[in-house]
Image 1 (cartoon, rainbow, N blue to C red):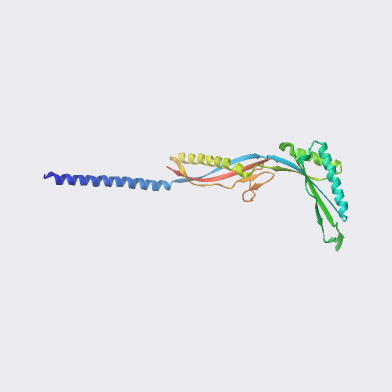
Image 2 (cartoon, rainbow, N blue to C red):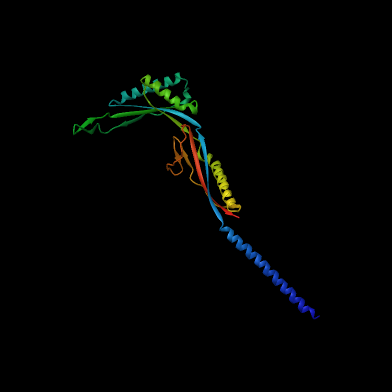
Amino acid sequence: MENKPLTKSFILGLSILIGLASLGIFIFKGLKTFSDKDRIVTVKGLAEMNITASKASVTLKYSFSGDNLQEIIKDSDLKKAAIISYLASIGYEKNTIQISNIDISDKEKYYQNEWLGGKEVKTKIDRYTTSQSITIQSKEVKTTEDESSKIKLDLVSKNLTCNVSANYSFPELNSIKPKLIAESTKNARVAGEQFANDSKASLGKIKTASQGQITIAGQYNYNEDGAVNDIEKPKLPYIQKARVVSTIVFFLE
């Protein structure tokens, strides 16, 4: 009977000892976790992609000016008919030709002031100006530039001079965003793993991630905030280069 108090004391002491040991382990783990949260690495991931135009077109613009509105409208109609006839002769079908409505501007003043011989004099200007454009869908995106050059030269030789330009339509930015961001994240992880290896650590989970600005460079520039960037532009007009730089913070373990 005398051993019971001793046994109870032993059990109580052992329980306290186990409790303190457990508490110490939990504190150690907590401190280690807290310490690990301060061990991070910030890296950037770059991704670039070439985008090819999905469609292309050639636009022909011409204008006339004069004081007789009916006369310049007639001249514009004659030129339009001659250009369409030419386009048909080189293989363009009607459904590939789009004609804009004729635009007419009427100047309220017929004279403007100019300096001639050291004096300000009034010179007469045409009252009316008409402008119109014809757009044709290109047969092949990659040959649109050659196509527009040939058309321009042919029209000059036929006394049908126009302002001729090639235009390209590219896929929407949202169609390439996921692939660009995935590639930039992958490249950031590669950089993070290299840093972790050099630090005798292992790369952990992502703490924070920031998708950088997606920029597109080419003959027809576009980016999300309208800024001009220093990306090397592709030489071919029907190709654009898209770039994104993501900033990612990883835990180090």
